[in-house]
Image 1: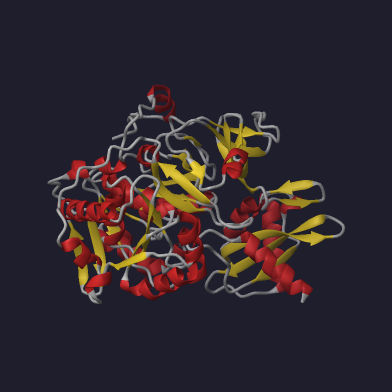
Image 2: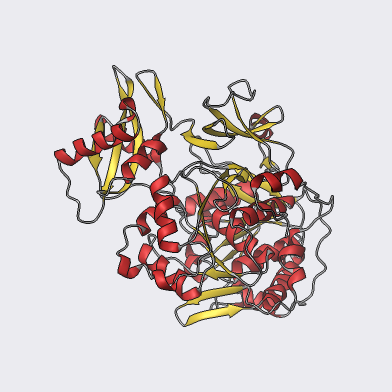
Length: 543
């Protein structure tokens, strides 16, 4: 356990203090210390059934992979790439790279070869682990990158020259974990690239300590031997650090379910029930889709979930109530970003936080709302959410971009680029990305609050709210709504929704434009892509 336990946020925040050693390698905590553990490290769904891999088996493969990495001449400052569906290869490559002193760069299987090639070039990757499903895409990416990259395919089959099992077979099953510093590179994840090219975010080894402490608080102190899962891809922090590596650090069993196609809410209920999942990370869009699943398919009597955590988008009070009703467990919300994975948390059992707020800083963090000059803003005022450094969870740098790294800071505050406010009780509330906020008739309107109001209506399954140009008001509030099953689109329903929002919020926040749509653009992790939606609408109006 990293985070100390206590009955309330006030108690834990008052007593907790960071003690990060100068020399630290995350693989020791996530792998080495679990030798002989009885429960499986992984439960992997395959066409042939569930295959369980023990901690000793994982440690064996990680040690062999560390020898392979070292034999390639890779070490501190080098990145090993992974392009694979959830399974044994990703944690083995991650832990093996760390043991050898190198860092890991997980890449999304949703990426086209061009996007993968950009990351291969930017990170200077010379070793890439891919599964058979993504082998062709990996080879095309290497061709486009124009640099030598050794590809090892994790699945059986193929030639020995490119087979990961064959490459590991003759290597020793023991490896002396590298004596790294706590601030040495651990992982490389890329930002979404909403403004310009994606930036490579380098996290240090201390990041895992910060991440696990935050997840212990957020998951309400999960225990070794419990089962943890998220449908989030292991290329993203929600899947890789918040679920996979946190689970391994704590000695839990991590469910690995390869995902083909779009998120399936009914299949998610099946996975939760059949694996006996105790702690689960589901982004708000996933929860909103699960809410539409008929009760007969929700398997309520079979669920063993003790905490549901969510993040990436605000939820709203209606979703909190639904989760508590269906799962019999609290919904704990978190706010963070690639540069600071988990900053604010709302632990329903240990703080009296209003539904829909982001809660308070993880004990050990200091957060604030700051103004344009980087000074803390008074309670109730909208400003940028910031966290004070130094802190073990904070990113180390943007790869090869010292100017962007410096611009992320205002004195001692790391700026998130997200707008929020802090109420008089000290709770943080999300307003929106700085570039998502709508300016209409002199008002600043956060889209998430309008979306939450819309989905509280029984006819609405999902909603996305954006600002569209208006010569009189600067922008108008425009809502794009996916209807719930059984609801029919009509002008009368548009007016009903408009009045519904007005009754819950303020007159100026009610959408002046409402359109019914079949689908909404989301990221692979389920976040609404408001910018993409806005660009699509503007392009359609220009056409």
